[in-house]
Image (tube, rainbow, N blue to C red; front, side):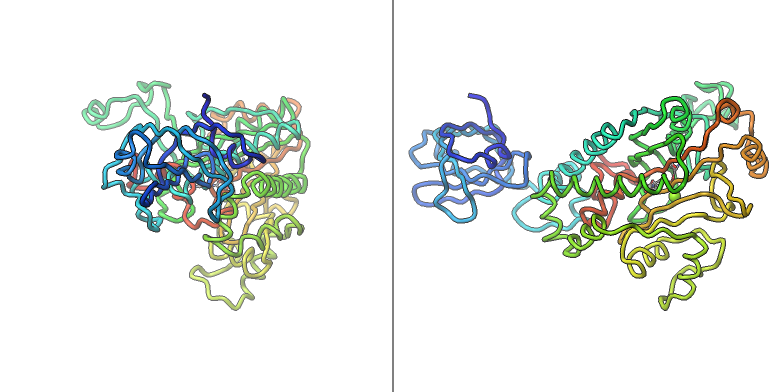
Length: 459
Ligand code: 4AD
Ligand code: MG
């Protein structure tokens, strides 16, 4: 008989009779004539209760089954007389696959997130982390579904690159040189390296995205991104996933329309397709989530300029750790104040001073600011960062000169402005930050399977 997954069992409307499942024992209780077991197979949050009578041939072994053990169960699916569940399985045969010893760390008690991080290989077996990673999987699908429906093409940008898109220099080096011979020579000779030049892991697929947007129209990349920023915060990891749409014939306001539609659609999808898992977070992690979802789905996101935001922040009664003045790079405390306290909903901030933004952003007519946009959301701060791109060759070149960027390395990028250049825009959304927003999880390390952070590369 074919095995049924528990999420399918629980969706059944009427008693199907024979059933065969496989899973892990979450809890077990021995009574006089039978043993109750809660089985979970990872397919959903819910367990299914299995009742094993003492007339089963291997009952002596069944009685000794421990939390974390695995088994195959055949039996009858029946309506449960007990409270709290609709169905239970009356076992006719239980084959034990593997018995977990007593030092299985996930015994039935609440464990702290910090402790569970130290056993990241086992934490997806808990209710909360099972839910996180089922939602993560579903949301990756939702991204592709959204873009398929909108007619975007999926671009797989290279992960190894010779250019620094963001110009922040926070890159991991890729090399095949032998550290011993480098040490002997006293320097790295990149001409001897695999690619014959300095090479890094990508910090953004944007530049590739732009080339393909100017060919295929609307594209998106969705994949891993690497940053060697040494910031041990609850919102940064060294390896994360970024979604980067890039749209030809699109200006800054079209870019914001797109970002708003994306965030609303993904949120809606999570609520509809991951109901049980999402409820866990609203009930046990952050009770204010339903209100946030209501604002995301039913109100327009705020749009205001950086300059206006500075004014609001300077008038704020709150005391910030970092002083607010025109020209600063906003800190997370400022971003959160705007989204969380002042507007109480997502806020698009536009038109930042050119000094704090990368070379590719479109220069505004004032000559001081660029057509940048960040989306700030409650609890997280920056969720999205993007811009309209500079499509005018002469303006782009003088900006690169100003920033002392080697134009010859970007010859191909400049080509796109020489041949059929058009206004275009895009942004990057941190996938983990989005997951933090919809689950209420406070630390980015807890929405990524095996987090990579400064000094930590376990698992
Ligand atoms: O604002 P960022 O640096 O923008 C770019 O890289 C642009 N090239 C994107 C584009 O226009 N195509 O990064 C985009 C988003 C941030 O808003 C944040 O959500 C996320 O990526 N992010 C990180 N997430 C986790 N850990 C980190 N270290 C992150 N750095 C950025
Ligand atoms: Mg940014």
